[in-house]
Image (cartoon, rainbow, N blue to C red; front, side, top):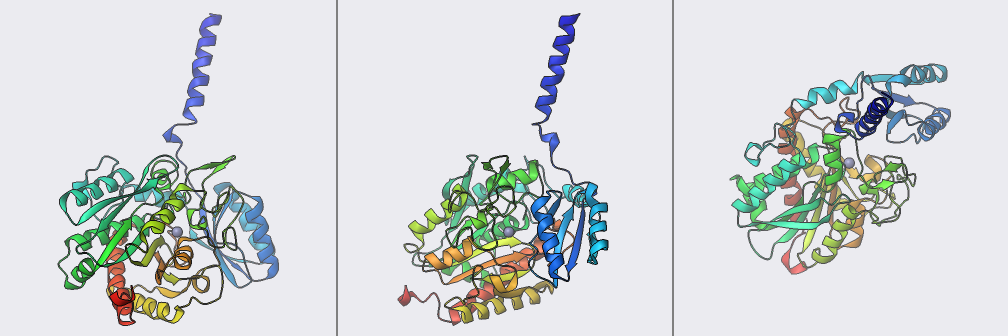
Length: 430
Ligand SMILES: [Zn+2]
């Protein structure tokens, strides 16, 4: 009898231990509330900085920096009263943007195709697991002799960092499109795959022109581990998944060797913008560097786009300083053409400007690194839909995938046309 009890107890313990590691323990955000706080005084700024520092029950999107600032914060369900109390006692303004984030995630599930969905069912009306994106890329490579596979390296977990090159003739200058560096920004890989599809299949003369006269290098899901993690473990994960002490993950877009660990990044391991143990500590960021070291000059890569969400911005260097980029005026003009093309597509308003002017100070990102270290003059980080302070965060409704893709394709057409008119991509300069 005693033996049986011991066996039963042992089985229960084993089961309890095992269940801690199972997929059913996917992160849930039931009744997590998204709020927008309006900071009016320096006391408010200090208070919010302290709150971010000391509690992991509040997820900050951006940091408290100055009075007259709006700050979006996700409040854990058990802290909603505490937040209300803080707001009331300190005379802050607070607007509820979303009462229950889990509902958004649950609603989105119906627009996510299952993991074993074949490439033949790929479209821009749903979100897809990494496995389907990879098999869709394989299909493009197999079916088109001007499309070739790129292997930039392996992620921390050993997944391939896959890319794809489209080249229809020799001598073209190159355009590098980096997507999916932040795991939860699902619209980014979706737009990258749409651009690939259009460059391969579109008969629109303006798209054919881009396909014929540039070589295209796409990395649709740079942070493959993180992307997979958002489908299987935590929808709101941003970083890669490499462990650091009790926490894990590095913000790959703070891990590049350009004012590394400076303004707008954190050296604290558990924060969302943790910059890693050193510049290029992370294999995913390093893979981009090594690829550009080898090919930026040799293959005449002159343009670099990094796709993110959200905020509807077309940003150019720099993020770490208010000093102007050497071709600031050109980048501004090109950005203005791009956002005008976006507006003319579906009426969405994007802003353009240098990164520090438009979003917030940041350092160690791919855009500033690429601009500063290679002879690549046209470099943009695009924050896709939705607008700043969107109540849906990174959970962009699937119905908006296609329109977002269409407006970004049109922005590429307009931006590259303007860059050409400003004298970039001339062969005798290369
Ligand atoms: Zn991002």
